[in-house]
Length: 165
Image 1 (cartoon, helix red, strand yellow):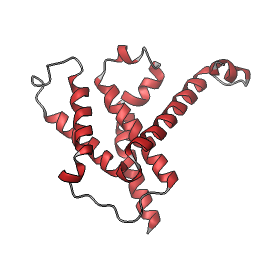
Image 2 (image 1 turned 135 degrees about the vertical axis):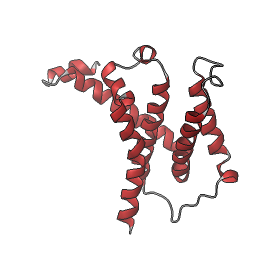
Image 3 (image 1 turned 180 degrees about the vertical axis):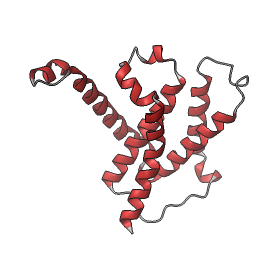
């Protein structure tokens, strides 16, 4: 069944169907991400994404010219390596039993959107628009939205910690 026809039957715009589909896909990806990374390593994965992005920003462009998508490869490899070696590299401990289930889900949602925003920003827009629409793409690559996705996980962690106290 096509969502745009269903939405038009209810008198809603077809762009609403596109937005709902995008949110549903992100929710499924968030659940899979949470199950893959684990409840207690979400904080560490977030830190590793920030570290990998910072490393990528300082690597000279001529070093990164070995492949068309070298930025994505270096970013993803560094995130995976940092996550796997996290126990040996960093001494990060969270007190308590971790986040509640709803907090884990929201945190994984923010991390998935941030990860997609970073990866999509390295790809040419023409390639990405083969898979998602230009409207949906703007939620990932627009500078204001990229800033929101960079800050949202941290703001959520601050919000969660204040509520616990």
